[in-house]
Figure 1 (cartoon, one colour):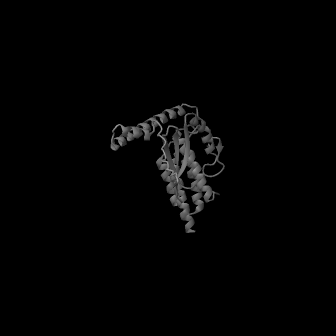
Figure 2 (cartoon, rainbow, N blue to C red):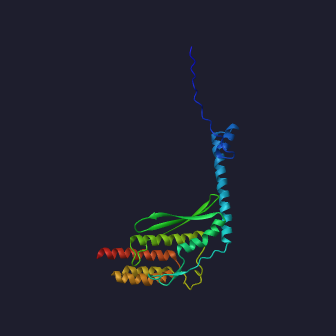
Figure 3 (tube, helix red, strand yellow):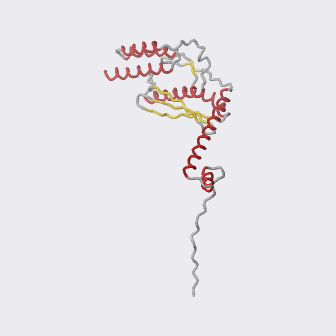
Length: 245
């Protein structure tokens, strides 16, 4: 008589859900007699509560960040183009200025290129808190087809420009002297008049002169939307004149 040993497959035992986790809460609710619908409502309520707490933590951290003495210095002057001799802070200057204070209060920034069409680019800047809440600011513009730039350089210039301005916007900061350097208040008629001059240009040489002069004037108003609209009008007109040759 032979004896045969038959091994019975062992059933895997699931690890218990961590205390306080959604799974643990759901199991406890089921054991107490709650229906799946009631559990769903309870979980939705918990999600809304968590979101509210995360937003509160974000607001407190951002308020603490704003209390810091963060200064963005304009150090570099443009050497050519319509904004020649205008001083500005480069992207790394803005990042280096804001990052230590952001990190101190559990905040971090990042960007995403959310639109990358042939004639239009859009960048979104995200400001996140370790508690889970985030805010975002988006800004767009055409490729910066300035003198001497190839297609890749034009797109890189616009991307960097948008990253710099969205970071300043989401943090609510400006470069030192942004409001005290003698710039005139925004005037919609000013932008429209220069765009009208763009439409009248009959040659690339005339267009370049308008771009140089109008770019300086509109940039001096510190109105980014007007400057982007003017730049797009110049870009569109340049394309039209180039194709007509």
